[in-house]
Image (cartoon, rainbow, N blue to C red; front, side):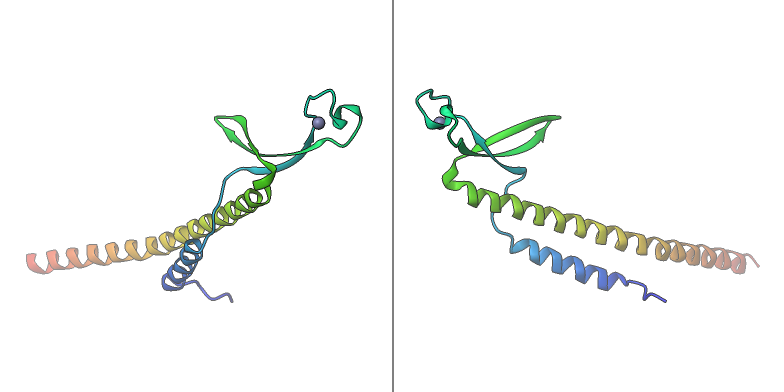
Amino acid sequence: MEMPESIETLKAQMHAKIKALGKAGLFMSGTFVRKRRVCGNPACACAKGGEAHPACAVTSKVAGKTKAIYIPVGIADEVEAWTSEYKRVKKLLKEIDVLAEKVVRLHVPRARAAKRRNASLASTTATSSES
Ligand SMILES: [Zn+2]
């Protein structure tokens, strides 16, 4: 039989994940994409079948439309790391959310049981005082 998770254990797990969030590095949302593009200069080697220029972008959906932010090559590796970090942070947030939901669900039966106890106590008190 699986050990039931306690509220205390779940909360400790939430704290641990929040601590991990605090140690997060710089991040940026979106999908990092590396492409090759032709610059448009007819004199350039890329226009004559040569290798196209590296181009990077971070794409994201904004109001249902794909938005692309072009990333200069010089900062590309750094920004790519930011997008990975964002995924890690997002995953942690999701995990904290799952734990929070479990804590809430564990609380519900307890609150109901307490309410029932209080209700029966109240009715006992009422009957005993009437008699
Ligand atoms: Zn070119």
